[in-house]
Amino acid sequence: MRMLRSVSRGLWDYRSFILIILTPLLLLPLPLVIKTKEAECAFVLLLMAVYWMTEVIPLSMTAMLPAILFPAFGIMKSSSVAKEYFKDFHFLLVGVICLATSIEKWGLHRRVALRLVSMVGVNPAW
Image (cartoon, rainbow, N blue to C red; front, side):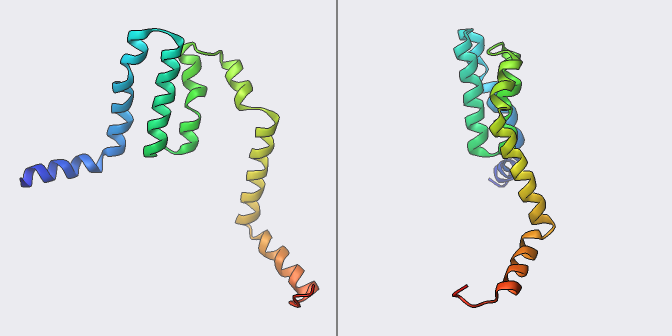
């Protein structure tokens, strides 16, 4: 019984690594047996779903899996995948996130709030 606990604890400690390796191996018969683009796409989507639910890799990396796997499987050309991932809106969103992160890191939002409070005062009417 004690040995079983130690084995299960050892497996639990390496659960992320095991999921990263075991999930694609268990899903691999799907594209190998059916051999259609739909089956390959289902493989990628199921792999993403498992990785997303278990969070074994960061969500941002999980979201980039189709950018790597779709051209590798021949589902889409890399140029069409890139068009979907890098639209103008996405670049704007990335820019805003970078700007917000730097504002928060350097405390600019606190300085602006302090400046406004010192100019206006703490009167609720203002």
